[in-house]
Length: 118
Image 1 (cartoon, rainbow, N blue to C red):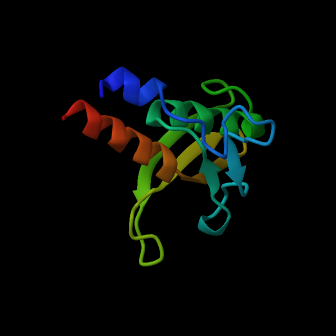
Image 2 (image 1 turned 90 degrees about the horizontal axis):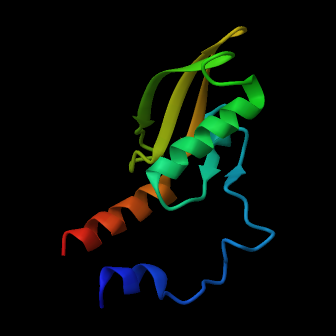
Image 3 (image 1 turned 90 degrees about the vertical axis):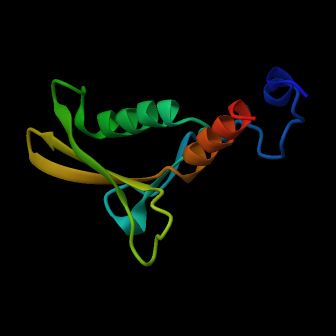
């Protein structure tokens, strides 16, 4: 099966992305590990855009009202996989950290990487 067949001829899944119930970002408000925002997409490029949009909805325009600071993956005993991404931002009111579960886009990126390397 060719790469294009694998990508475009797959059967629709029960949780169809075109469903009106689908949310690209779900979960909590992202302000702590207990309330992470879950990113529901299949690539890290799209995940970065969704995370920027999520923060912009709360703080305004990126580059004017807020800027990204240090970013890292969180690895603890409770979250051994490291699929929680912490993004620190600076804004007019100070600094804040947002936590995003990026398991789905990381898995999608890994599957694509595996297919390309076969």
